[in-house]
Amino acid sequence: MSVIEGNIIIDESYLVEQGICKDHLEGMKQETVQCDSDYHYYYEMVDTEEDILVPVKKIKGLTGSKGEANRSWFDHITNKAGNLSWARLNNLRRSLEEQGLESFRQSFKDPGYQVKLIHYDKEDSYYVGSDGNHHTVWAKITNAPSICARVSRYKFNPLKWMNYQSIREMEAKFQRTLKQYNLEFDAEQYWMEADFGYIQVNDWPILYFECPVIFDYGNESKVHTVLQEYEKVFNQLEQIVRLHKKWGFVSDIKKRVLLLKALQLFLNEERQGVYNMLLDLYKAGWHEKYRG
Picture 1 (cartoon, helix red, strand yellow):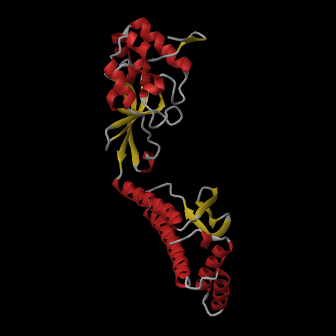
Picture 2: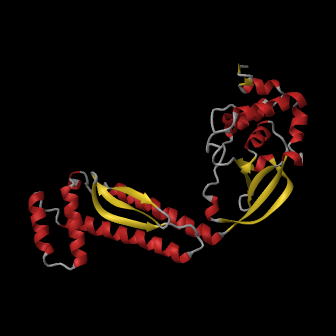
Picture 3: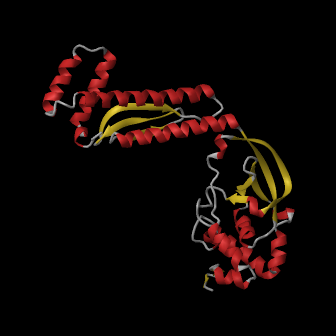
């Protein structure tokens, strides 16, 4: 056991000395802290209850500023992960030594030390809200049966979930499409109404893309607009690639460029735009990378 500035470095041997079962600690090495950062998109708060005894085994995560997703609870108590206060962990460690393990476990039921938790009904899981990270970590590590909490209850919204999934799938398709065509997206700026930037190759901007930001996934009109914007850019990229393949038999790129410029003179504005984007891709050397 190591001591620095009066604080013990909490490790497995110390925890075992305090009476915590090795098998439980092995479980805490396997169970990871989860993140609920996206849940607000498809859950809605319905009410708050005081002094609720919550089963500790149902607590899945800490606040975003303190917990580190996909790292174990054991890593958090040993200060290898997360952003917990070493001093506060040690204050509770002293309470463990003074009270003994069983009394310490039971102390988490005391309303005077209630933590603030969020409950998500569909998963029947709890996450630390704004207060109680250090108490929660110790409750998990010592295998306390329950902890007293002020619980904010959130209800699952199926419509918001469906819309959220649709947008996430479209975002993933966007990234796959860029990779497929050897392109990149340079997001210039994020602001309250939209994400925007340029689809580019070799730092050469090809196509401007602006996508509205969704704050309420229950707003089907906004969701529909975003999906349409993605479909629009997919269609533009597909037209460019089809045009590239159509004239691929002209192997000399300089001759192909001259041919495309000549053909532009007989096209409407929309088709001219497609030709211009392909010509920009050729200028950027895209044809040397893309082998689709």
